[in-house]
Amino acid sequence: MLIGIDLGTTNSAVALWQNNESGGEAVLVPNALGALLTPSAVSVLPDGNTLVGAAALERMGLKDGATATSFKRLMGTDRKQKLGKKEFSAEELSALVLMSLRDDVTAHTGTRPTEAVITVPAYFNDRQRKATRRAGELAGLTVRRLINEPTAAALAFGLQDKEEREPFLVFDLGGGTFDVSIVEMFEGIVEVRASAGDNRLGGDDFNSAIATAVRGRLDPDGLLGKIDERRAEALLLQAAERTKRGLSDGQDAEFALTVEGARLSTTVTASEFEAQAEGLIRRLRDPVVRALRDSQIDAASLSEVVLVGGATRM
Image (tube, rainbow, N blue to C red; front, side):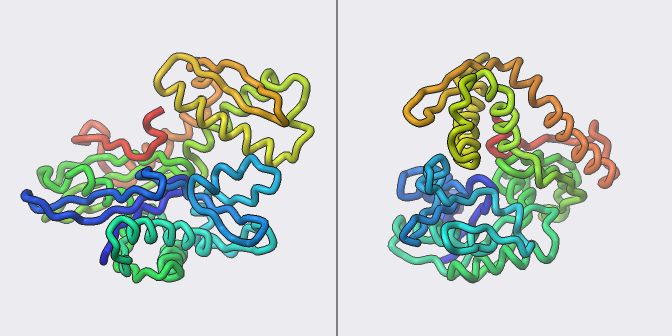
């Protein structure tokens, strides 16, 4: 069985091809919790067993929460992360996420998948692509192909049916990375004319901006300073994620968390968030300008802008 996997910095997803009267379509497979997105997070328990996804993410604020996230940023490097008593490479951590997605498909269909197509950023170099293939192999999957994320986005939006040579821009702002690509269709093939991005810019950075803005007034008595700094940061970022989602639908949102039994809360307004994130928003502009320049395509000639990634919903 062949599956398609979006291996993301913050969240990952897996899909199957399902035939129907119109030919067929890709259908996302839910995980054990019924969610279509699985957090790209791995946690090691004191007994050495591992958790993947939401269960791992929930351990970030615990005293013994040995949890890794955003390890996609380290793909193709020699850096390792220590979780509990063991060190893990980015490929090994990614393999655990891939195994979890593989097992979700097995539970959903009764058949264990053996092959996969996995998405990668268009800017990934050869070493990063090989690391992604290696992660698939560690997960027991034969990686039939790596597909560039803007190409996958174009296919998902049905843009292969557009008139040829109508350029469009794919604006992909995920949890940990930002990619922009200028794409054209040529003889039925999706052609990426130019790509640019920032692998240190994503929704997580907007969470950090919110946490930085409120920490002082949230905790005047310094309760967060009395616990482990990594645990304090995890609590702040989890609260910031909830606040960011609230601000996506309203003009203000509560920022709240609990430290050692004490509830801390404050209110963040949309205008405060925008002011705090102004520098991040400016950083989004540069890759767009660079991609347009490298493709030698004027912005006015773009037929469409495709927004991809959860952070574009802010």
